[in-house]
Image 1 (cartoon, rainbow over the protein chains, first blue to last red):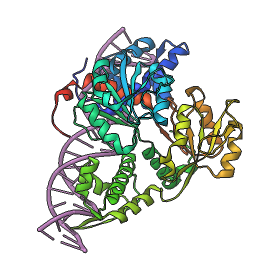
Image 2: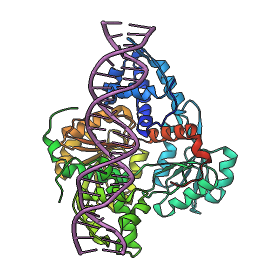
Image 3: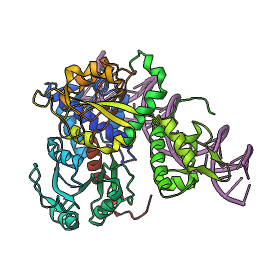
Image 4: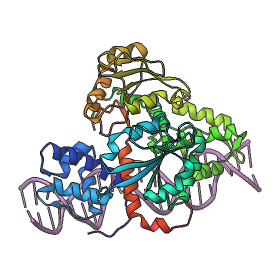
Length: 220
Length: 220
DNA sequence: CATTGTGAACTCATTCACAGCG
DNA sequence: CGCTGTGAATGAGTTCACAATG
């Protein structure tokens, strides 16, 4: 077992990726996997996988590989997704509604247990997922009552920071922010941004500048 | 002007971020900005901003700073967002529908000009955005006719790779993938993934492991 | 003896520190 | 004088290469 030295976020991101591929492999009936085969699937370097796992322990058998089921369980433990997480969402527009209807999160233990909006026309309405839209004024109390640990922001950018502050004040210290602004938070709060416009900007840049790739045939 | 040496993707991501803040600043009536002030807003190091810009030219005035309007125009030129981009989307479920209704993209020159699905019940239906859902079988022909350059995938994961291949075959070499699987593509095709489940895994990890932060009061 | 686990080498990115210049 | 632009120094993350081992 290694000392808990600083672990790159990139490593955590990859662990999540490995887990997804392991699930797929297990579903396909495999029992054993080598870092080389997994690396091929994940499009990373085999040493990278071993190094990433090495931060957390020794999970493989030399000369053999990794037991699929064991490794998956270990990864879930490391990622802390071997439990249920309660989430609240604020901003029940198109995006918010679609996230609430997605079975993708529930299936992985991430459950929306409260939905908020400030639009008087929306408050009180029932959603297909079974939740009733609450007034953001009730956020703090609800967070406490339902032990909500993750806040999701799908509001217009103008109010995103205000909602983030509301979450912070309610001691929700993990925020998934979909609005295209940076929300500022103290280091006690983890913020992950999912910014669609930045991704599009990157694509536009690459399409225009990386002409050399266009004709390239090589894989890698 | 610098030689086009390899530019980190992180730099492009930040340029997009700078641009957003500049737009905000311009709206607020500012005309001039220093790397230090912008850095504060973007939560990055001032030297980082100057280095990022330095890849593409000299846009500032020593002793003064950057002209806001000029810099914004330069950034838009660099990012290639000083033009319109045509996009197609495949998979008109909840997420797809909500993206189609978002005014956020249109406002930045990213226009959905075609929407596809394979569900016979959806094909032919009109959407609030004005588009009619087409059969994916028509994708290749439509891409050519409308000069579509960016493909957006909002299908279930099981068919994501198939759709990606369809885009590739149609010479669409930029893909924005929302399905929680890695799509494999030749290096001639740029793929950006927006993976909600990975972000949640990261939050769960951080919430559980970075306890030390929890009590931390310090900023930054 | 195939494959893991890991120190060392390397590559890439960020920050420093100051020269250059309006 | 103040702030940009940038080479040099530092730091972080990835890959190599091989010793360790079931």
